[in-house]
Image (cartoon, rainbow over all chains, first blue to last red; front, side, top):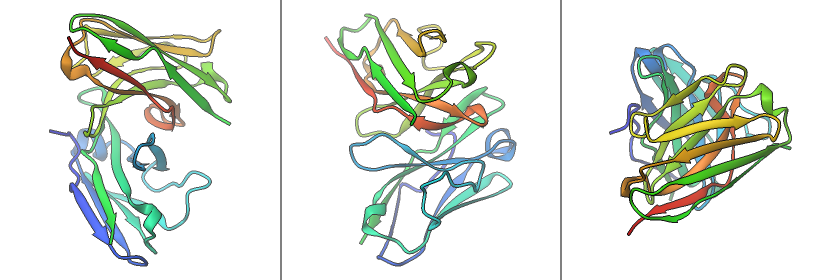
Length: 110
Length: 120
């Protein structure tokens, strides 16, 4: 059971906009930045979003992040086949004093 | 360019030990926290341990506390994870990751991982 809660799956057709939610508590999302990672099949995770809504250089602006209270979301617009991957949210938890991940969302591009 | 290369994984019997290493390059290693994250076969990511940059403060997930030890050698640009009293549920790919601007509270670069398999 993950500390952060994500839907196990999401899907969309090419060109669509998809959002993935991540729910936590005050000790993690509420008090700390949220990070999002993309993991393509058979590869290591890659940073997509840091500090709730910041994109590292090289990440397309089709990817955006937001946070409100103890929840966060990742939005992918103009969906492409290469976006098919697992997506994870992460944050520090002040009560547990460790990092915590969501269970991951498998995105399928139909 | 940031590069992280893990090594030391392999097959080990229950109760055994392994020492994982992560060689870092492309950044000033001593200025950044380092983290280990693992992923069991077919499962999601699990945060394991982190070590801060300046003070060497360490943090551990409850699942590994008392069995795993994280350490760093700033002269050699390397972070280690000593795995003791290994159990079958420790079987996973272990990723080394570099802390970002928020230190150990968020990682920005990942290595390719090293597989640890615990089985008799």
